[in-house]
Image 1 (cartoon, rainbow, N blue to C red):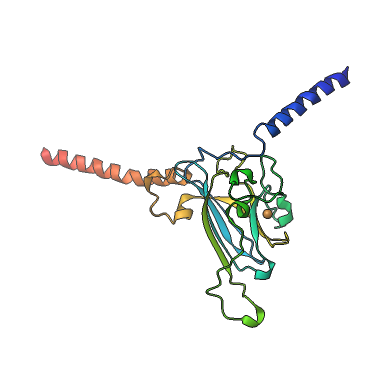
Image 2: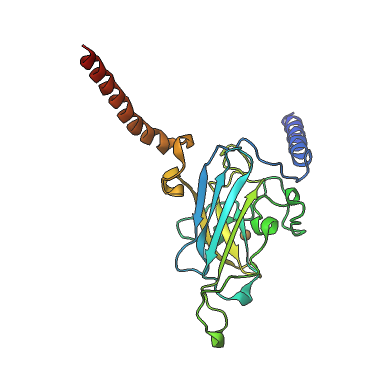
Length: 246
Ligand SMILES: [Cu+2]
C-alpha cells in the first residue's frame, strides 16, 4: 500500500518536473519589472591574475540589466581568449573559485553547444562572454614596452552592454545579486572570481546627478534629513510674513 502511494507521488512529481523542464525548453525570457537602478558589483580578489570589477544596474524601464566591465592585469595574452560568466554559487571566504559551481543556467541549458550570440535567448543567462563577446583583444596602449617578455600584465578589457536575460529582482530565477563572476583562461582554468554585492546609489554614482528619483533605502533616510530644512525655512518665512504684516 505504501509503495503504491509512493509510486503515485513519484509519478506526479516526475510529471511536474518534466512539465517545468520542457514547457519553455531552455529559452531564457527577457526579464521585466526589475527594480529600478538596483546595482550589484563584483570585485576580483587581490593577489590573483586578472583584477577589476563588473557592475550590473537595472534600468528605469525595468527591462534587463546594464553591465559595465573593467578587467585588467591579465596574466598573459597567450592564455586567452579569456571568458567570464556568472556562476551559480557565491565564493566562500576561502576564495576558492571552484566552489562557484557551474554557470548560472536556470532553464537547464547545458554548456554545449557554445552560445550563439545572434540568439542570446538560447544561451545560458550566466554566459556573459558567450552572449557579449569573450576577451580576445586586450587594450595595451599604456603598457610599457617589454618586447623580450611579451605583452605586460597591464592589459585591460572594458565593455558595456545591456543584458536582457539577467535580473536584479531576488525573486527571479535569473537573479545574479547573490552569485559570483568567474574569469577563465581559454583552457577553462578559473583565474579569479568575485561575489556580487549590492551597492547603494551614493556609492554607485558618487552621490551626484541621481536626484530625487533614486528610490532605495539610503535615499529615503538622506531625503528625510534634506527635506526637513526647506520645510522649516518655509515655516519661518510664513511666520516672518505674518509677524511683519501685523
Ligand atoms: Cu565561468
